[in-house]
Amino acid sequence: QVQLVESGGGLVQAGDSLRLSCAASGRAFSTWGMGWFRQAPGKEREFVGAISWNGGSTYYADSVNGRFTISRDNGKNTLYLQMNSLKPEDTAVYYCAAATNILTSREFSKWGLYDYWGQGTQVTVSS
Image (tube, rainbow, N blue to C red; front, side, top):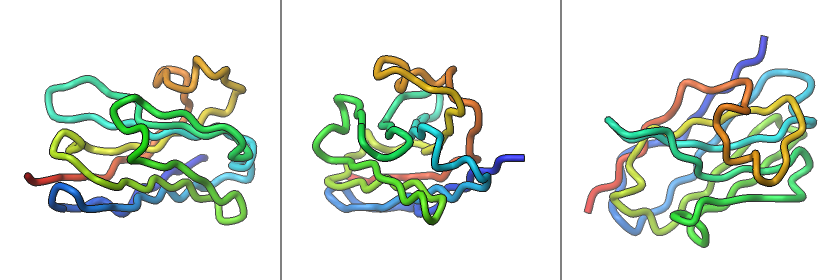
């Protein structure tokens, strides 16, 4: 059984920063591609960023590129999302996800190709 648990969300003001963490169980964490997605009420799930198994490649949605940074610590089985210069439109529930199969650069943004999901953590940004 694989479990992903997000933490670090909260209520902040525009321009503030947050660091989200995703703690993963499973011996194979270091072989998984990992991603962050978000979903606002009444809206579709949206890709935020992804990182390859060894951290060698990262990918970002245009809406967060330059503000967010994804990273991982395979020794701690943990995925991170550093969010800077937060905007009200970043308000959403943020989910981490794991892909057990190899993904191409075009596939990392496809939520349907991830196998495991966390329960989500709420991020609210006020103006």
